[in-house]
Image 1 (cartoon, rainbow, N blue to C red):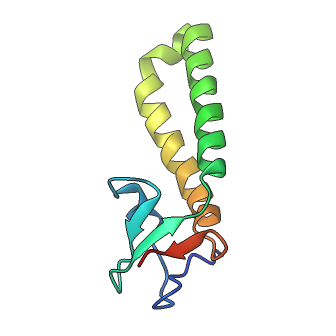
Image 2: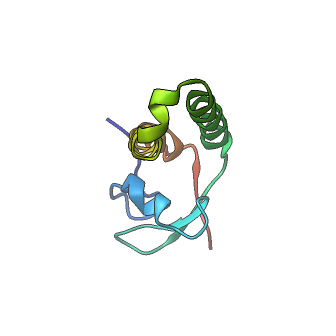
Length: 98
């Protein structure tokens, strides 16, 4: 399981609370409303860059993939995001913004 826990109220943070935020590195806890900040975005940036390169190469090299590119790309990104969000929201990567 993940240790995505708010440092202030010690409640579980939902991964999609971060995805619905205006900036992906500043977001609010669903329970106490405190602003949280991510210390590092290296995991998100590296996974996103690799993902975009793979999708572009698949669209370019596989003509059969072009018809389902958008649907498949969105679904795969949601699955990837769900896995990496738990790592990004670890207690070592969260800071309370005062």
